[in-house]
Image (cartoon, rainbow, N blue to C red):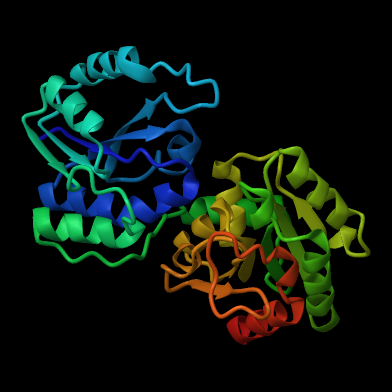
Length: 321
């Protein structure tokens, strides 16, 4: 059985969210599955050791210049040609796109399972996937992604980065894909100072390399706690994940690191400033904090300056005690 799963959403977070459903398909048919995903899902970095996944095929489309290999009509035919090489028997398409339906058929895939066509509007990210797997495979899947890190990698990383069990090790996911999601450096520094009054702390700073993210990183590294900080921006995910696994708790913006942290089993405080609450609460290991004065959070809440460091610290105390 040769099965293709098409998950065309952008980013690491969505890739993590769909993992339980992808793995459910593999288990149902007792076979490894192949993924068609975008490069920025970073699937190659954090899923290459997943026992349920065979090949990871990159969908090269939707970049800013719209000149990807699989963009446009010509790109569709290129994608068909690429998929034909694998002789897939079945395809599971986690979207409502007619384009992907036609591509799958013209690629020679005989059995195609897909979301209802043309139903993208107001489609709930997780419930749509749950309903899809229930309808097609009669399986009830919990939204609880898990990424396994080898114990050997955890032990080696602990030694390499001198991570002590006597310290309170905290991941700070200070990056973010958009300006409205990135909590100011001062909020993190205030939280760090509250923690350091009561504990011997070590902070691991996870962020990307964009100028805006580097600015926040540098502001934290210029604070009074710079000697307790370890920046991770020069590492790839394979190196970062075992570090996170060694942490007692994570405090993250709504970013890839919040999803990854929770998925590898670390209790994760998610700072929700400008995104629907489900992105920071779908896992039992996620503990969302919303801006002061708000009852919930969504697009255009614009609450990054109203995340309260005291509330973050109180949540940390509850988790570690």
